[in-house]
Image 1 (cartoon, rainbow, N blue to C red):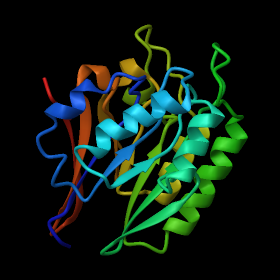
Image 2 (image 1 turned 60 degrees about the vertical axis):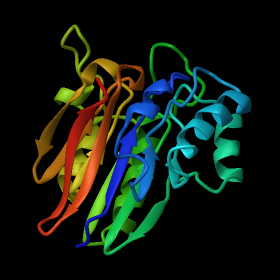
Image 3 (image 1 turned 90 degrees about the vertical axis):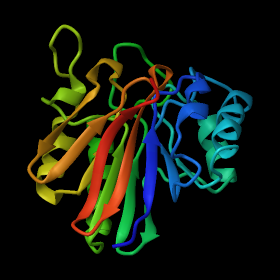
Image 4 (image 1 turned 180 degrees about the vertical axis):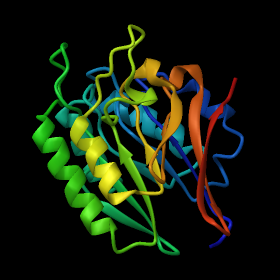
Length: 222
């Protein structure tokens, strides 16, 4: 493998200032945005977020989260950076498999779908990604029963189906979000699962190519 790296974060919610303090973003081969760019925002608010990222690195791979509207997804599609439900060949045997939206929440946010739909998208992209040697799964809805889906009360609110699919397909790296309090990382079999949390607090993930495959680490600008 080469010596490339990628930067990933999400749950931006229109607070993008921390991007200026990610030292290694400019040299990254790409920036992955895992969802929730806005707070039920407009095209204009999403465009501002994308512009702030593009000022640092124009190679953006993005998807919507549950707090983003259809207008935001249309913008991503128009700009040819929408990776939701897609498998993107990153070269060198590496791919990005991506699933945005979220399973239902108590808050009736704009882009919620059923557990079955999230699992169908996830199964589809992981099935297609199986042809690649090194798979990065970026899924806005976290897997159930883990560090990364835990509320402050201790309740786990992630997707059982997403967890089962990670167990089955074993992507090398899983980038997730949605649950701001679920900052952390863990292993599901061989899969390294990371939730950098709410981007306003400066958390992000760096993914590196190494001689032994992909390696990911939680980072923070603070």
